[in-house]
Image 1 (tube, rainbow, N blue to C red):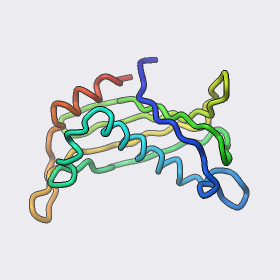
Image 2 (image 1 turned 30 degrees about the horizontal axis):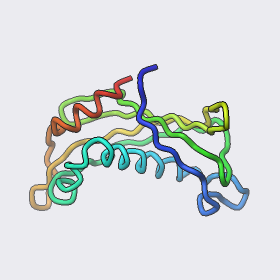
Image 3 (image 1 turned 90 degrees about the vertical axis):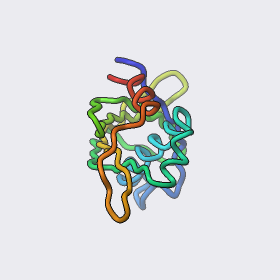
Length: 141
């Protein structure tokens, strides 16, 4: 498998439910966090544009759960580009429990995003900026 962008996370108590395992919605939050850290690491110049008129809109999200995570588990989330069109991209995510010498797949999912530009109260399709396109293609699966 090709190179992946990795985001590391340690599970906190606030991310677990009454049973003690990670609440399912947190996996989707971690997808968003992984995407944000990718932008910070690879295209910091776009952060300013995102604060103004550029928008990366989530169009779809999914997650399949294979095993549970608990407080203080060390999680590695791998993000890869699955598809890139004019103004749309599909990202894949794989979640691993990281131990001292191994990784165990605990979940996997996808997220669709669209690049848009704000025009008044409307959003209009906008091609991905060249820097973002190049950064994403580095992680094409």
